[in-house]
Length: 185
Image 1 (cartoon, one colour):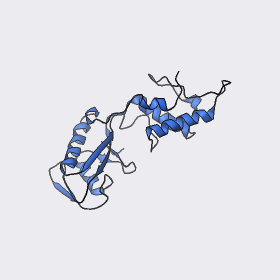
Image 2: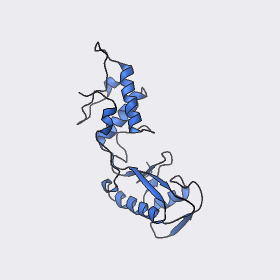
Image 3: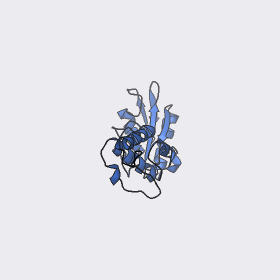
Image 4: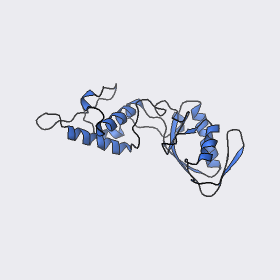
């Protein structure tokens, strides 16, 4: 069984395609992003659908690295043949090596917030995107009304932009800078 560590990061890749999102969120997100781009905003999509296997790996590497779970108690996951516990030359559990491998995974996944096993990403109901623009942004909401945004920040953290997103059913999670979802979670 392969040991945990950075080689797992390339396994079960997540998507950056809006086409992988579940309906009606897929259509809502596409319409919102189209409105942003039409208004002159730059939109960079970093994540959409996350396979459950990837969520499992991300969740438990983070917990092991932070010493929140005993690696010996991590439940198996169908299709993920990983050995979380590392051993030394004598065959004894090497907790330091185990935690170091998990920490390398956390770094490789670029985990900013502890991942959960089931999330809007695993359900196809979230998109992580970086939004920016220069000057004033005039954007149409889902009802066709134009909203002019002259306030800062000129990013997804702008509360006026978040109100526009809500009209499309694309709701900002305030505590996670790139994260937008069907319900704000």
